[in-house]
Amino acid sequence: MSRFAIELADIQAARRALRNIILPTPVLPATRLSAELGGPIFYKAENTQQSGSFKIRGAYNTIVHLSPEEQGRGVIAPSAGNHAQGVAQAAQLLGVKATIVMPERAPLTKVVATRRLGAEVILHGATFDDAVAYAHALKEERGLTYVHAFDHPRVIAGQGTIGLELVEALPDLHQLVVPIGGGGLISGIALAVKTLLPHVRIVGVQAAGCAPVPASLAAGHPVTAPAAHTIADGIAVKRPGELTLPMIQALVDEVVTVDDEEIVMAIAHVLQHSRLVVEGAGAAGVAALLSGKVPVQPNHVTATVLCGGNIDANLLMRVIEFALVRQGRYLLLRTSVDDRPGGLAALVNHVASTGASVMDLFHRRGMWRVPIDRAGVELILEVRDEDHAQAVIESLERAGFHCERESNWPI
Image (cartoon, rainbow, N blue to C red; front, side, top):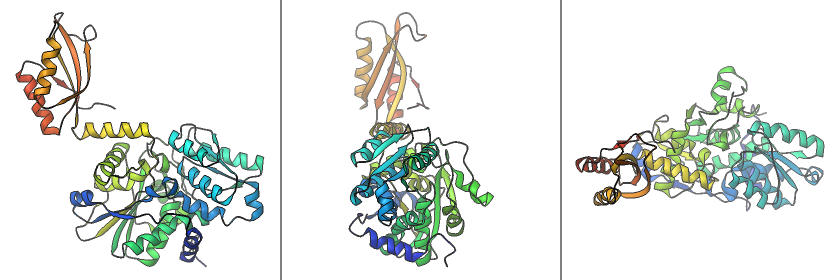
């Protein structure tokens, strides 16, 4: 008997159940990241999966094995977004009614996509854990069949099929970096990979704003995080599972955390250099690599799972802007001009002569402490890089425009 909730045979059976249901997502070379970090790195692009994340694997493997009576009652699931779409799509494929409970501040993209898949969506509570509690209450009230987001053997087995695909695509794999929310993804993958390639080092990544796994590992049982504040909503789970935690303890070599700024820069890196859209959870592994928290060896193959791509368009815009500021591509300056006709034109024309582009401009008088004969001006400029930014500032100073740069410009 297996010491875990599942064994390799369960993952192999899940793969058979998922044949012709899921997409065989690609394993892509992360060329730019490999060059920057000095070792071969690959992305398992689950962000290209049906419904935009890996969740269809575990959801379908669970619902397809329900009894006709359980399917007939309809299913219910709590979700921060990706499990919602996985359950909704699986239920649609199987002709089962689905009810999904999501936090009130769940990304609109995920809410709309889940409703389009035919599920009833109920928004309740501030966090995933609030949604879980309400889903349990509705389960009892309506007699629905509960589909857990991570702590169920068939869910873990379904997610583990990613591990089988990775082993086949990368037989020389040395290190695998996997995001952790409740632990279903990393548990299934780790069991598959460690069984077939025991030497592979597996590292889990949690968002620093919601990271209960390190404390749970230290305590030897699931511990609830005090809060969940992170843009990586897909892994913002405040308590790991009773089934998944022992698997993480036994199969995962290390767990690290990344903060939101590191996640933002990782989203931008994948978008800019691999032309792939990932959400916060999907970028967590890349963030751990970029930040140096997971070292890369020159001759060792490293892979990470881009577990989801369902990022809200407004958040993606903010991420891009934030990253451009941090990369020195946007420059925020404050200066002043003579308060007379042509004063502002002289400043703008000089900016143009430096090769910078004016993205936005605010012309102010009384709000700033400037002499009565001058007007304050705030400029947002697009520049090529940090060297160009410095050259623009120096040129403006030489022309008589004293500049103050906002170096910690918040987005």
